[in-house]
Length: 187
Image (cartoon, rainbow, N blue to C red):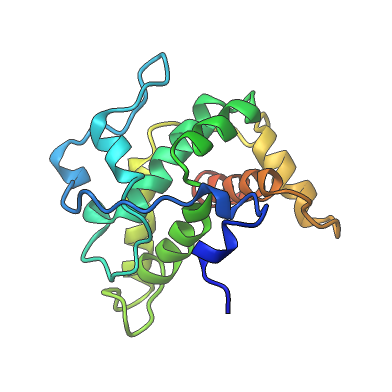
């Protein structure tokens, strides 16, 4: 059985993004943490620390303290900032070595925050909808699906049987799906 550590010695592009730091745990978005890039695309020190935390394997008490939610929201801000240049988005994701955690964070949100299974704090679909609305409120931009390149890529990918050929395609496809889930769900 291969572990991520043994796989990184291979030429696997996605696994090369791994980071092994666990520096902070208690940044709470409800404490007015600024997750936005300024006009030059610089991130705060708190944002930088978020991406050093590694996998989020624990059950979260709420969205405001969830590392996975914070990183996904930050990644969606990058996605919006670089919406016309996916190469710059990939460079930012690579800078933070976030590629390996992206899908895990999305799955964490779906399984622990947007599910009403017994291991979550959600009692019924109303709780799930409230969690979805809370995450959506934390996203600081709007997007018109008629003008959205990501939405068009996502819809094209859904109708295609073509497989993804590189980690970059997987990352862009995943970011398109996350973006569409939170900003174009009704479209």
